[in-house]
Length: 140
Image (tube, rainbow, N blue to C red):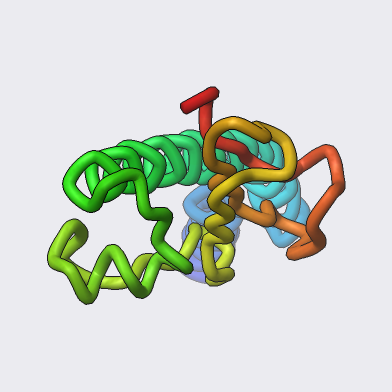
């Protein structure tokens, strides 16, 4: 009888240790939910930073194209290039660029906004001209 009691106590101790050794399904679910919440907050912040960076990249590119256009006009008796392709063909730019949203840049000379200058525009995320998200060169 003593042997049966001893084995029973030993079995109960082993079962007790097994339940304390691992995590329950509920604990795992709670940890995963917390990780998901943290990742969603971080993801939103990263996405907003990415959008701001795209706009800054487009602004830099638009200003560079405007600068290269002025240089082209200075070298060619104030003749306006017809498009960005003319700047590439005359080696003022190494290759034709697209904006961060994969749209072509618009170059107008003389401009419609800068009547005495040039217009260089990125259509922005929506790809539509004349909307508030368009990115334009500073006055040239």
